[in-house]
Length: 166
Image 1 (cartoon, helix red, strand yellow):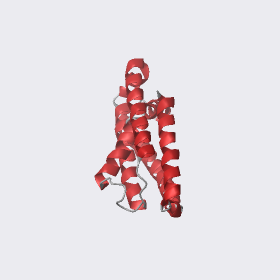
Image 2 (image 1 turned 90 degrees about the vertical axis):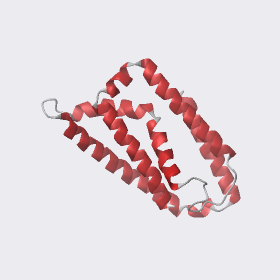
Image 3 (image 1 turned 45 degrees about the horizontal axis):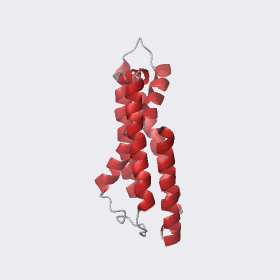
Image 4 (image 1 turned 180 degrees about the horizontal axis):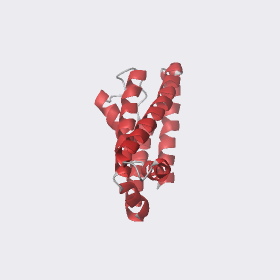
């Protein structure tokens, strides 16, 4: 449901705030400049995505309801947080994007704060749109054959994304 999606979105946005903070203190430049640090985060992210994909592929077929996923509400938040935190391309993207909008003659923290709030607001709207679309397509979340196909499809997507990241 949409309420569960909001918990995941909260985790995603919290990670985005952390990533903007990392860039703000200059670690984004270090991560971009250090191939070892970038590769470490990239491989951790790839491994996590592959693990998620395998779990999804092997997941038992259960009709989806508000609490049937077996994840406590805090778990949904943590899943969103970990998905975004283990995405090294997000930090590289933020590090590449933000300098264009930062005036070095002005205090940087307020500028990063505005950038972070803007990024979180836009991302929340986009992710909410996806969640609402998914809630409209809910009838496919109750058919066992559809659920098995979805598990295999999304499991394959996660494994493929992890392999491409690696």
